[in-house]
Length: 254
Image 1 (cartoon, rainbow, N blue to C red):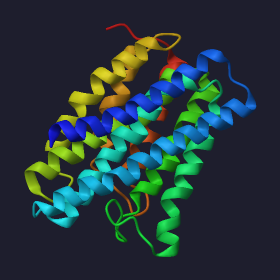
Image 2 (cartoon, helix red, strand yellow):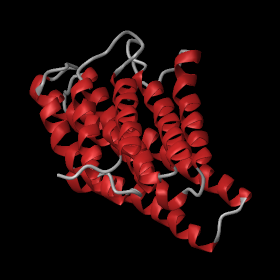
Image 3 (cartoon, rainbow, N blue to C red):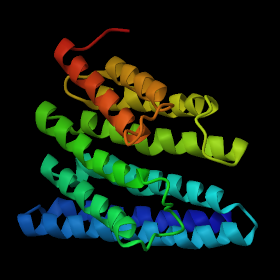
């Protein structure tokens, strides 16, 4: 089973690698449209591929809500996370990140609007997947456009994708249902703090300490939700604010 899942995920990574390789030959408007289309196809592959994962988990008597929650975190990491991580290499302009985010927002919203849910990843009482896609595109676009740095731009998205993804998996393993227990935040900090330092160090100017601060703030706010303002919104907005402050103040020594 483990090898099958790894093979499934690796095939998606390989698809993105091919797209990344095509970038070497130059990007035109048409090529960018094809690139976005390829990314959307990859995303759909992951979305519908998790249907098989859901059926596998259900066949082993896992609770439906638990299986759906695991699938959502798979999408966080292997759809939003991998696409976001490759954005500085495969996208030449921040506007394309916004386009991709909008496309996936529409894709995830349509099932709720029509009443035909993607039952293996969606539930009527939790539409946070729509917020995830929207905030991913908006946060990358705003930071990249205003600060001019793609590595800072993807930081809040990766906190949301990998940090919150690991958080949900840890809580699901321990409790078997959606909860905001602090144990998840411990795992999120373990993932996000080194990630923030690394991405901050790649930025110009290098802002590794601000990356760490952004990670800590994002980890803290993940526990909270205020109606439609869910953890996806809070993580990206709070981390974005910290990065803007850091860009204004400048590098910190530590």
